[in-house]
Image (cartoon, rainbow, N blue to C red; front, top):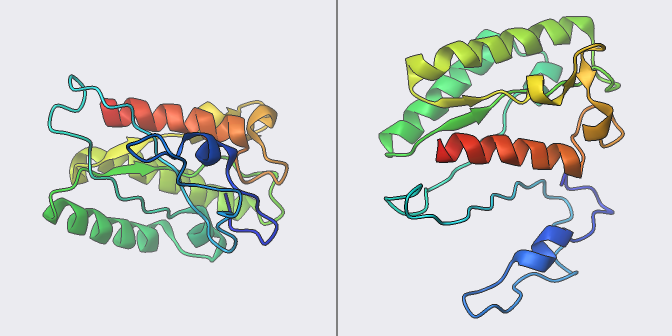
Length: 178
């Protein structure tokens, strides 16, 4: 959900956001208009989460920074700072790379180079900085065209649709449980 003015309430949250008594805590009026958001759903399993449900903080950084002309080095400084702050607070960190976006109206070959370099940098830094890198580019890519696979494309060539979001959720779930 990207925060558009005509955004409707998330059907997943309508069906699943419940309090401990099973009462819905989310309604059709909860559209979050003007707010982009991320939903994380965890199924508690004592074998997987022996220390309890993890404290999750999400930082979304990447394609907008690339669009704004930032270099991998500039984005890397910000990522390194955020990872250091999170690690100092005792948090585990997982960072999702940038997905394919070649069919977006704001894509360019120069921005693709930065995208590729950024994802490569993240993959190399995960062991150096102690975070988990989640590659979404490869699983969501139509490798024959170097773009977002049509079954995952919301229609703008940039943002994943529900199927794409589900694929990303599966990758995040595997990494967090991991």
